[in-house]
Length: 193
Image (cartoon, rainbow, N blue to C red; front, side, top):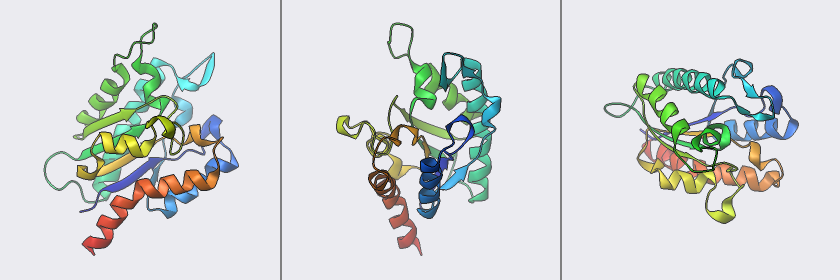
């Protein structure tokens, strides 16, 4: 069974804008199942309305894990054992992976992985602040490189959390990079038919 393509809807809550609505439409056309979460229930930092409080992140992780478990059940489940999930994320997750001095401790990745484990999902997480489909590509830190780092080809599902960092990039390039990310799963699906 080819890997499921999943993504969080980006045109939501405080981030609504026409460019993100078009990104969501492009992702859906590529075969990504867009997941909706109760965004207003996840607290945002008072000084930074783009990132969660720690409590907001915990609520996000739990809600995301439940939504993913439901999506994977709808798709018929894994090949064998716990579903293997590859997560490519931006600062939605990575923001809380650092201490006050900027040293990476991975606490947010661990919190998300624990929530997913409780739902019976084995996850490999590649979260990078500022990442996107095109954003940080020059450094090799965009979503396609992240998918390679966490072996998305061997996963039952690929989840993208982000796209917000691509707003300043040309839409055609962003949509093309999303298509390139989806290409291996789409090719596997075509071969399985």
